Amino acid sequence: MEITDSVATILQHKGYALVQAVTPDTFVYDAIKLMADRNIGCVLVMDGGTLLGILSERDYTRKVVLQGRSSKTTTVREIMTANVICVTPKHGVEETLRIVTENRVRHLPVMDGDRVVGLISIGDLVKWVIHVQRSALSQLEAYVAGGYPG
Image 1 (cartoon, rainbow, N blue to C red):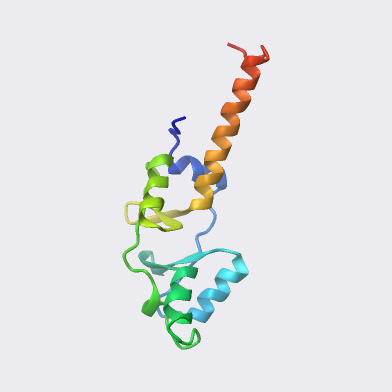
Image 2 (spheres, rainbow, N blue to C red; image 1 turned 135 degrees about the vertical axis):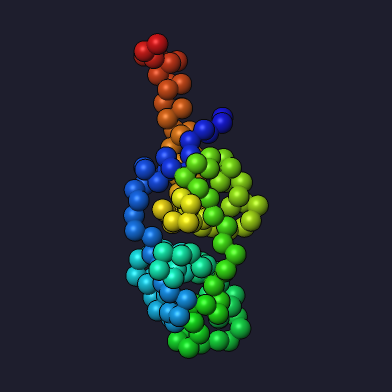
């Protein structure tokens, strides 16, 4: 089954919730605390409206914990992923799933030009695929039961 929906459709469905961001000079401890308080797996690293990077739990474990650094003295700038892979609202769901799979990332900022308009996670994508499959299954069941209006 081909899924023809776009990232914009997912963002409209889940809402354009405020994307959590920190500055590059934020201490890692404070960024991780924000992530824990909000129950999220990453924060964007922004300077004003400019996306500079992304900080994920993976960055923290690999670049702080495993290297014996202190999260209270290390800045986000020192460990963030600077080469951020992004998508646009026009990207298709299947293409976006391919991007997260091939690049082994869990979160993709959604950019409209130079402006961050949202954040898509692999969880958001999987939930959308399940939603689409359930809708298709319901339509098929209605058709088989003779209740399909068409």
